[in-house]
Length: 449
Image: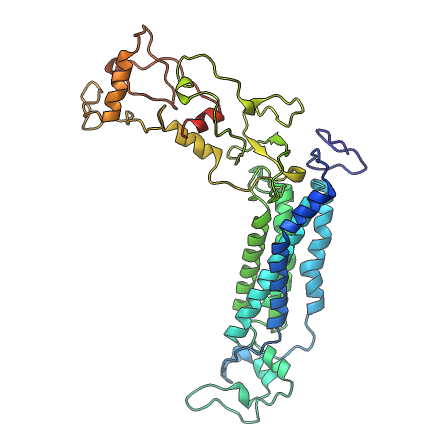
């Protein structure tokens, strides 16, 4: 399928058209196998979720005079377990492939979204169940579940114990001590929350342009999750604290799972998943509008020494990172950084630092990698003429001796913010008039090696 600038051929246009690279079935199997540990851990967490549900947890003592525990037990819940599973898993797993079809149309995005959804639900479910059985907080309808004996009261120096309950159904009584946190709330915000983050990334919600339609579309899944959480207080299954904590857990775990496989929501490539763990040497390099993009396209072995890049020496070889779009996989980035995109236009995983940080670090370094002396503001070591009177270090003395041995020129040596060797007093009092010369990002990066 041929990708054009504005749309892609076919009945339905794609929001972010890219030219997909054809992948062999062998490589696709290799990529999927590299994520087998993720799927295995996710399935183990899901198994732990169901296993902990059968465990008899801790049962706290309670007071028969506590009005917050005397609500009636509702026989029919507004959101039973069956519909809950469809809401938190069925709806996202149906909508995300449709969103993928109309936005990026990528099988790798489909894989990452499915894995992230299942991971978020498994993490949330296992953690919620573990906290439930260890805390053992009574539900608001615990007294109605317990069915205390007629005339029962709290002990003289304590509270009422569950062993005095006359409830014959032990499973019903056991569920009465799993109020904190709310499982319906945490699971609903985990599933629908992941869908909300997925939508926000595909719509570029945080593109600093402020579209109300995008905001409503991305926040709508949260509204559905909130309705499920509120229904738990209407059924007297949970206290309001249980609902709030469970909702927060679902949001945190869903965002954690989303960020494992997708870039931040404010990224210029938020609609693309991270690249696979198995690198492809033939991946294309495409320009983006990112100002702080993490790039893997720098050359650690420059073809010319750093000392020739910051003076009047002959022009260096052409920068390989500004090659024209001649079908070789390199595109002219113009004023933008380049990001190496993986399979189906995926985004590289973050490295140790952004190119903007490298740029700033190179700007504060000299031509030999040293940090220049500060000349911005006068200090106690400077004379009234603005010249430094502080003693020079051994390195600066070597630099001055080197400059004195060079042929003198009538015009001062051109300086820039990336190469600031020691200046003579004449150059300090009469700085060059021409604007500083800016070098390519590759030169700035190589200057600090």
